[in-house]
Image (tube, rainbow, N blue to C red; front, side):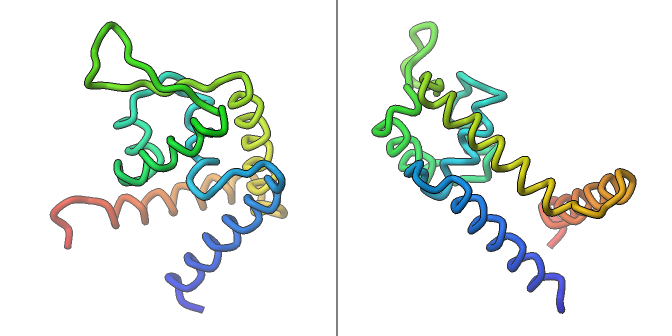
Length: 140
């Protein structure tokens, strides 16, 4: 099986299993990774969220709008700067973030079942190198 096929198959499987594990939450694609990021960076601005979650800014606006409508986040300015909105988890959002983090952890545990710590570290290093190779500017 080719690398690109395996990569797409793994991504689709992870996404499907993540949303299945979060069944009944009403979360839509894109929202779990934003919750996960805000768990570590609550109060981040939208530019930082888009960059960290690999979401186009226009798409992020829609994702955040849905999260705000569900009461998971609030968006507000800081220090009177109206040009930059910061995103904060609500108490409900914090609960959902914790559930999302548990689902991500369960998926990782399952994915790396049978791997030694060294094998996992080696895989993550190799996968990071692949990502870096594919995202380096000017290396077309």
